[in-house]
Figure 1 (tube, rainbow, N blue to C red):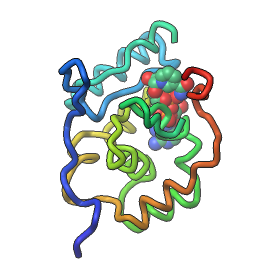
Figure 2: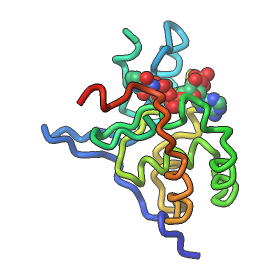
Figure 3: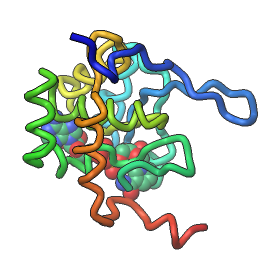
Figure 4: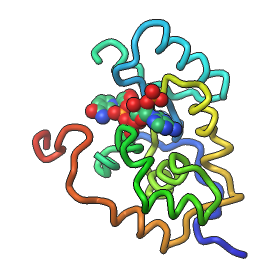
Length: 160
Ligand SMILES: NC(=O)c1ccc[n+]([C@@H]2O[C@H](COP(=O)([O-])OP(=O)(O)OC[C@H]3O[C@@H](n4cnc5c(N)ncnc54)[C@H](OP(=O)(O)O)[C@@H]3O)[C@@H](O)[C@H]2O)c1
């Protein structure tokens, strides 16, 4: 069966300054010390080359005006949302994978955060970018419909 989203997604996103930003990275918001170090090492071993380290030191669904989606997992809250579970079950992937794939198909880079290496393993480039699966228009629309104005990060309207 042909699935609309089942095309390989680009590994990088081109920035205006010529830098190629890896589309899949690791977030580190509130990760500290040895735990943060272990998570970064696990991500590097997994092959990820985009680590959002700024939040180690001081440290929206998808920030469309930027290229990187913060809080793609809704800070963990969206993982247990029934609509996410339903889509995940239909496409045979985990809730985290469908949330991240949705943002990637929207053209955003993603930097999900976890300090648990077993969770990171779910987020390899091969698992998220591959052509062996994808979200069709209906599934993508179901996930887009979760937008309810809740801000997991700051409100972009306050910054612009
Ligand atoms: N949200 C913001 O305000 C903000 C601001 C600046 C920068 N950023 C950047 O964006 C990155 C991502 O945003 P975020 O960290 O706020 O949110 P996120 O990536 O949406 O969610 C991270 C949370 O989800 C949990 N989690 C991950 N996988 C899980 C699983 N399989 N089951 C249950 N829980 C799971 C993590 O806990 P464990 O670690 O225990 O697995 C963590 O508490 C940040 O780390 C940072 O690099 C975010």
